[in-house]
Length: 308
Image (tube, rainbow, N blue to C red):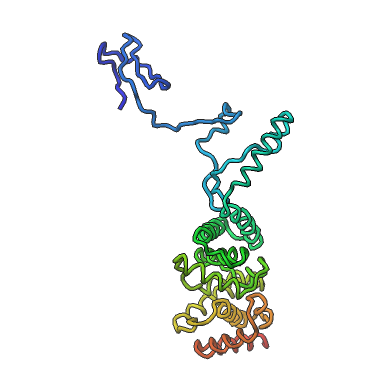
């Protein structure tokens, strides 16, 4: 704590020198306190515009796995800076830039290409930054463990993205990842299972309810239909109808039943196309839901109202 009066003369006319960390009595000149600790923010700006109060900051950009060096690396000059140098110095720095690239390790070169592909697929699927960061971390660990050998870089990237989506409960299907990456659905699934097993990543089964909002938005269904579909899924889970079934198929079937109950007619073909499953899957799940949950009466009531 700072002293409030001078112990020598009892004066209260004290001056605090923050740069030197001292408190001085203006009446008698006694240094009341020295070597004080400043607990405020420490602004250190090393840029050319460091005097600007609005641009003060303590740190640079945060670390991120979406860059091969996690954002901590440096580069020998930028092209715009090198053009301002003389011919001799310019050639020297161009050689340094070339050698910097050549001495990078095989892992770094792999990560440069793979993380660029990961960003492209992530942007195509409109994934949040948290999922992209998680996928980049999974891929980096896979490269460091040598799990990429014998597999295409694109398939491992897609498998890492799918694992990250599952961990963050962001509903994306293997069909969507296959379309975005150009890799076969089976290959992505096989790589995903291999990577998660080798890295010891625990992933819980997908919740079918996570897909309801996306499918309903694509089919332009009302909020009431969405809510009813979620209720149907909860009842189905209670009756253990979701065990061993694909989450997209059971979600699409619940949405199809809910649409029929609310009089919003959608064909099984339309629902199947949105969910990325076959009409046979929709039909089988639909029959199971009607039989086990006794939903036929609600559908018949809607049909009667429509006739009236």
